[in-house]
Image 1 (spheres, rainbow, N blue to C red):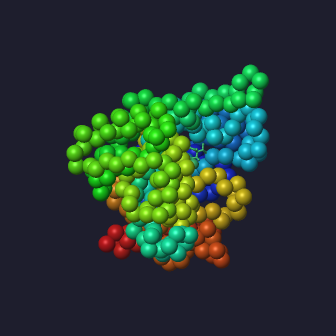
Image 2 (cartoon, rainbow, N blue to C red):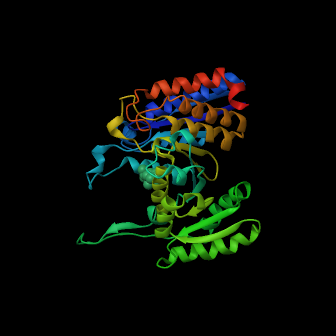
Image 3 (tube, protein in one colour):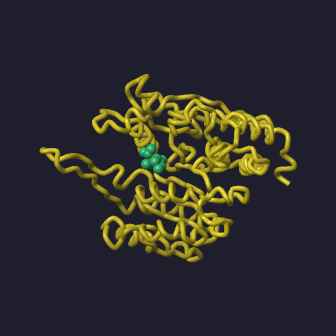
Length: 360
Ligand code: IPM
Ligand code: MN
């Protein structure tokens, strides 16, 4: 198979973790005889430094011309404490999501036996957790009108949703549920917010197309508690932009490390794959960041955008084997000395040399 992949390494640890994901993809090319072409482009703080724009036109064109996008991380501390910064790296990510029509962010949460004691939650609570969050990504409060009053004493962020925006992500969530345990939980704040009441109305109606899927509703405050108290309750979580942002960081605690989790952002055409962690500037350049979220994002890319399920599965098994061998970064085992590049090399080596055993 021949495919073009746009590679947006971004800021902080983005470049070093993305490099490990590329090693896994190159190993897959070698083992299966695929030909992937990688085109790098700028995004985030680094793009601001070079071009003044966190999502330059050229990057947009590279993304549009590609079959999938592999993305690292965005954000730089020099912008975090400057409320008056004229442009921010995060705007690049939001602009990319919007301009590429990436309206659904898919974040699977699962656990690994070997990491059962890495989670601050009791092992019996987290063992076997397996759910996926469908977070709406191009609407809601993130994209509503925002501003300040003339005297600058009042600020506002408008939250709005349309029936169409709710329906298109619902379709993806219900289709996913059909292939899983057939349960969708809509998380909202319908006791307070008009947008949430629209979500309930639309999703309830839409669910009639999927009689084999059970739909339930949960207020977001309650969901935040349930995710910790009884995470096995969930199968497919469907929610709006900001609730999904918050709940998925919370849910990462179940797995034991934010560094383990991949995500996909899908929509109209080219999809984007990225680890859910941020740019982690304190670790940048130190070769200590966990690259597994990025490597597993490459697996999601192969499966979701290219339909290469076996290849994706081989990457996942290689990551798991690496964990089982205790080859982990210090976010997982405090005194571990393994580096980002060592993990990347090990995963690539396992892919190249242990396909039969890993897939057996
Ligand atoms: C995420 C991030 C982004 C978001 C930031 C960097 C804009 O937290 O992808 O979850 O809030 O969507
Ligand atoms: Mn987030």
